[in-house]
Image (cartoon, rainbow, N blue to C red; front, side, top):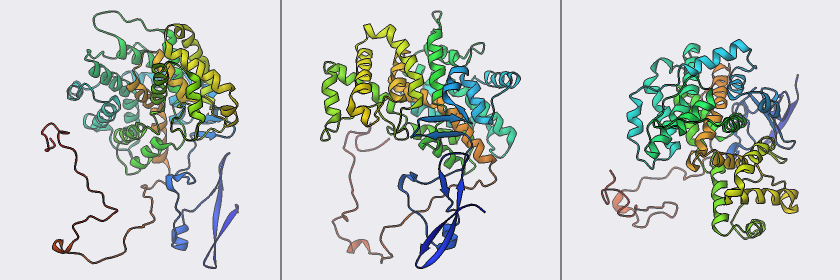
Length: 453
């Protein structure tokens, strides 16, 4: 018999089972709490609540540890390519040579989009955000891939996973090409995963495109480092939406929308915006360091510290060397990269940042690397989504293979009105209640004046 926790409510004692994982937190299992006591727990943001049991990724923020399926991220980043890591996350083991080749071929054969989908891209305005395009077109795959929508059918699940891994880089690149008014570049299946994406992003029909091997290496590294990170907001979204038995494409589209948020996947873009602000105001690092230390100044240094890692982010350690390599060739001619190097040096030595463990994190370095690769800022989060895709797929698959799967349905603590009588409209006050804010949109916002089209 395992350990138990005791809960006392109104002089009644209840025993709750304590579960212990392979390593990490001990968990009080409250799955039967409501049935036993009529009480629920309240945990805004689920910061203290485990929403799933998972065998995919282990994180120890205090020690700066990140492992995929038991393998250290440092070792995987050094020895594997992105698709090998994707296979590991999804299926639980590193592939044999034969398995990996079959996996690669299964993805290569499915990189093309249905020609009808090109009309979807053409319908977007040129200034549409690439994340909005990505989520919309990924969701539209459920229209064009009707033979892989059933999450309870293993063959359809498998086909959906292959298709999504194959087609999402094509969707991302097509979205970029549409935004800049360039011709779509079809995937070249003789290229590897990262080469193919860079080709579709930057090649032109009118000239030969040279793929920079160092850029391929950098992109491969970034995708691996972003491939999974436990029960973060977007992964939890994929699990929650997927728990309704919706198809993989729609579940991942929901995850893309969650990742788009400024508090989640937008941090690397925010970091570049901050560096541009520093450059625009003369490049005075000291001024912005002082502002970051001032508790009365709302300014924050983006790309430093991490909610989970109270030690150095292990991904940042890995990616720093790659950033240094790329910046050594560009910093002399680019003031933004000069500022980034100076800011990094100050933050790693200044006692204020060191004592608070506000080390440069993966967002700081990844934003700089994306910029060095020529990726536009509004595509940064799209690249994050491409990297996180294997993790989303792995968690969606793990959830559907679990014998304890059930639709997600959190409870709530209701704090609204108790029952009250209906008031006819002629007797209601002309003043709205304080808690109700009624605002009209300003005129001229919509193309038709006051009328929304």
